[in-house]
Image 1 (cartoon, one colour):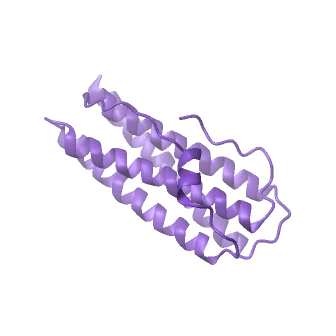
Image 2 (cartoon, one colour):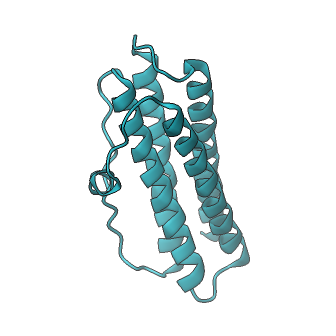
Image 3 (cartoon, rainbow, N blue to C red):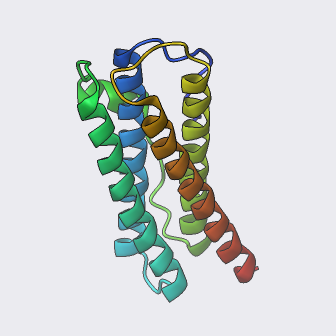
Amino acid sequence: MGPVSLQRPVGSDHQLSRLLQIGVVLEEVVEARADKHASTSTDLDPAVGELLEHASAESARHRRELEELIAELEAETVPFDEIQTLVEAQYESDDEFDGVLYDQLCNEETAYKFYDDLIGAIESSQTEFSIDRDRLLSTLERIREEEAEGAEEVTELMETRE
């Protein structure tokens, strides 16, 4: 899955809502993959299992926070299946140890890049949104930071395995 491109400033509540919905789907992908790996991988190292559990819980929390922001915006939401096709996630059912960690790292990095681009697009926008800009940005910045920390945790775990 390639990163979602955000080259232009965010110009409306509707566009912001759509972008936040993409974030929701990204979080759902991370959560679903983490849950799948945790439940289908045999002989899972306890540290990896703990990491997957944490990633799943964190993604669920991020999703709820994004949904709260979307609910406050004065915009129609885009049908879920339209967003889903924008974020189509293809992955093999690779239960291999390194495959699990590599998959998780890719998910965390994709989410980080998405939030980083989204923050940049909001900061470069002159649009007055129907939601408090500072609150919007601080929420997205915190989520971005947690994605960066998640990627670091996965990388450290991968390094201890080499």
